[in-house]
Image: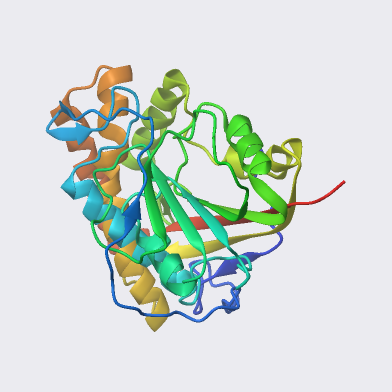
Length: 334
């Protein structure tokens, strides 16, 4: 059984927790204020990764191995997931400090580029590099200081200059070897530079029926991911993973985020609306290729299970929620 993630403190969005625990306020953790600038044509650089467009079970994928789709449905879901993080971080873009003096920022697995574009607007004097295994989501417009690149982070990184800050979000299950990823992070950070990794837990039901469809879904998904060699767990957020790569963990936090509007707190409702849509749309996205390819399920069988899980999540008494986990680490001199 996996060990629990080490956290400095457990946080919830302001308001009463699902278990009646005392509420905790979310504080601003970035020193920067949100800027809103007009979009200009962005510059882009091309990578060496070859992208395909593969149709499987009525979803499109960028290659034969990565389990998440890259179609318009997934593009919408990713944008909604990005919006979920904003109220959790009190409108900020990072959990840890991102100094205004940052000159080079890297976003791994940028997806739709929402985070990278916002950072580029906030730091107009910095160069922001946004990479992903698919270019299907890369926008055609953006600030002039952002560079989109088609690149597979599993390959050797070849950046000529180090970065002040590296950002990795929602990439659980993407890599066979997170140790290799963190080694590349350490190699491409400046001394004193930081990395922030964020990911979400599985869906939790406060009141879960015995032999629930949720438990069937989670069990099948985790089993398929293990067979595929890309475990769907949160082990990559554990402190020893960073330390082995020479990165010093400076702070960690976990936030409980309700799915839906069952919380009476207004800010929780905002986050909950976004989180519910992203989570329910993510059921099929995360499971369809894994379960059909590695467990031999039919497309309809997977979709039927997703519908049943959705019904369980939407039960008023379920009080479903997820946990958002953040880890900030630095590259320190010897």
